[in-house]
Amino acid sequence: MKKIAVFADVQNIYYTTRQAYGRQFNYRKLWQRLGAEGDIVSAIAYATHRSDDKQLKFQDALKHIGFTVKLKPYIQRSDGSAKGDWDVGIAIDVMDIAKDVDVVVLLSGDGDFDLLLDKVRKDYAVSAEVYGVPALTANSLIDAASIYHPVDEDLLL
Image (tube, rainbow, N blue to C red; front, side):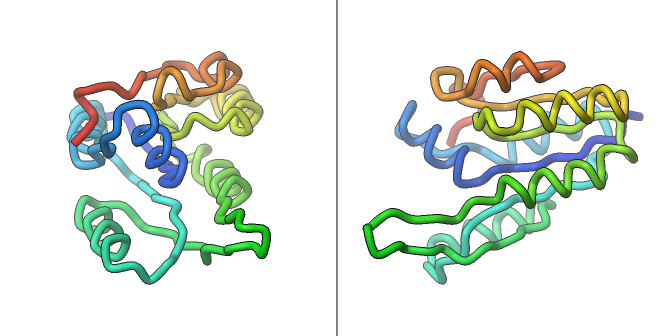
């Protein structure tokens, strides 16, 4: 049975599915799909912490599904922009875990992860699968993936 590790860039998936479809991603459906393909040995969801009731319920739901939820403080800058970037944290965790699994699954459309996927595919001989919204996933990330899964109607709430 394949050992699978899942890494969810929650902010990216939230905003891209909302922008493209006006809907939310169905993490439970993804879990069921991946669980049918192998053993999910690690699943981490990276999010921002805002002490908002809806977010807390969502994070609890992710934990109930089986995800470990890692939180970073939400930072509102004086110019109105916000920061809650998990790219480095995701990269570190992928590098740590990839050597022990057969498949790395990344939920993100962020092209910054293309080099990471190239590296783990080459160095650890793992399959690197990406789930992302087609119109909002960087071509470089799609090209770096072993398999690209477009997020469409069947993975939305």
